[in-house]
Length: 82
Image (cartoon, rainbow, N blue to C red):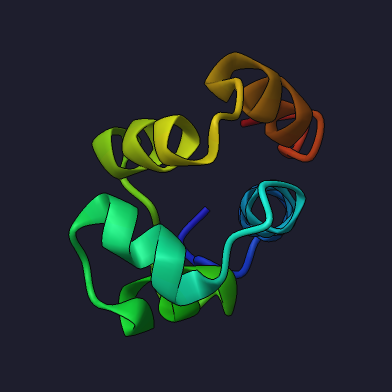
């Protein structure tokens, strides 16, 4: 798993984007909640940047999303030997 373009990573970014849209937030609004510039969110959502675990937890909190549910959904997209 040496690429950020894995199915699991795409699922993570898809779920985070969905959560942002469900929360009714723009990328700029989410970035503001995180204390980051808007391109930070754009790069995450377009799979140009990986999300580390602390950033993921901050994103989930800012979105009012359940991080455990998101990770469970992502786990289903991991290769069987991962």
